Length: 112
Length: 112
Image 1 (spheres, each protein chain N blue to C red):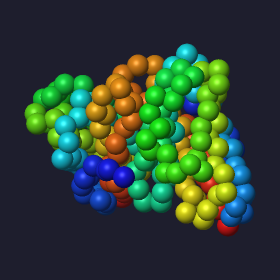
Image 2 (image 1 turned 90 degrees about the vertical axis):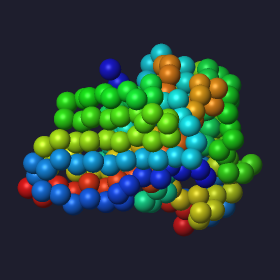
Image 3 (image 1 turned 180 degrees about the vertical axis):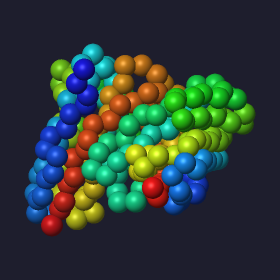
């Protein structure tokens, strides 16, 4: 099925470092969302972006909705060990379909 | 409040058997979604309910898969004549409005 192109695929960083990951699509989306998934759990919503160019923060997380509506990025500042997990971007096209299209995920490992 | 719950958490079955997976959405959420997640991949959309009706079932892979939501709350995903390729984590999500979907912990299905 259709998926977004998410990069990097994995990251291994030192505690305290900043992290950046991004997501691109060939299609336009009306909403971009970022989720975090821990092993054996479902994805947890981190940030939702509704407007092109929008920059939104949630604690140490900052995400932006690209101007072209075909991309988004997520930054994590001053990483801590509990940031470990898989981060997924997701695009939502319209309320009629309801479905989210997910990226392949970025696996983040943080070394204390 | 209570989040999305899914039962069972794990299901092991034999090829050719029938299985039912249950989802209890967040109380009051009118929209319910089923996704399937294979190892190392992002979730892939299966079906979307708005109330009792399936508004979009375009993600169901074939006619062995069927889902119901008879009273607009609990939903059951039904898989007939299971195949080894059906092995995956089946995720359920619900939402009140917009694109923000809240996921349950998933059911890990293993077909031997």
